Image 1 (cartoon, rainbow, N blue to C red):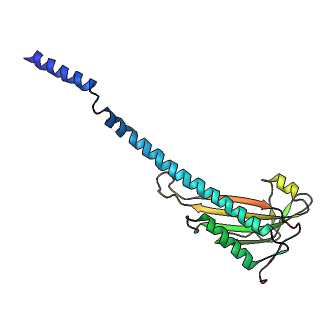
Image 2 (image 1 turned 30 degrees about the vertical axis):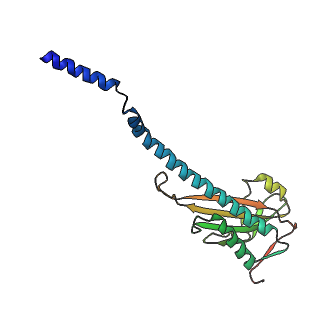
Image 3 (image 1 turned 45 degrees about the horizontal axis):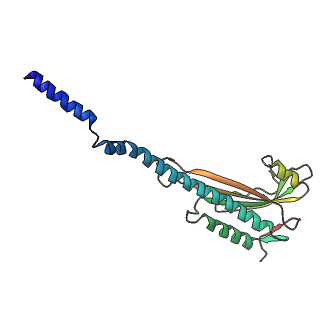
Amino acid sequence: MMTRTLHRLMRQCGRFFTAQSGAAAVEFALVLPLMLLLYIGSTELSQVITVDRRVTTIAGTVGDLVSRSNTTVTATELTDYFTAASSIITPFTTTGLQQVVSELAVDTQGKATVVWSRATNGGVAHAATSAFSLTDVPEMANLAKGKFLIVAETSYSYTPMLDFFFKKSFSLYHRNYYLPRFGGSISYCATCT
């Protein structure tokens, strides 16, 4: 009796190990968490890349618009430039978007000083006559020797949409440099219309 029960148990175990009917479901259950992690992670990463590109575009837009001014940029024009450029970040919120635009005077040795600087949405403008480092762009410093330079800076505090991979927000930053199109200085006028 014992051998018969043992024999029957061995047969059941043999069938269990050779059965294929639930293999796909088990494999799917094992792979599903990994696939979900990859999907959510790639979605979050694509959002960060999109926002970073928009930050770059905003800095480029403001700098380009200011550098096209002939001799003067007014406070109203600059406000319009900041407002127009901030719409680029849509559909993301503009809450953490900070913009700064400055004009630099570059001497013949390539050292830059701030002529004027304006900021919006909590951005910090550079103090007039303060030094501005161009060490990160030596080619631009050489090109602008004895001339003026427009610098547009944009920073954005990106908050992850799911808090799954990135637990806290982090800053994105981009800076663009432009030579004034008409060659000379572009003065800032707070009272001009």
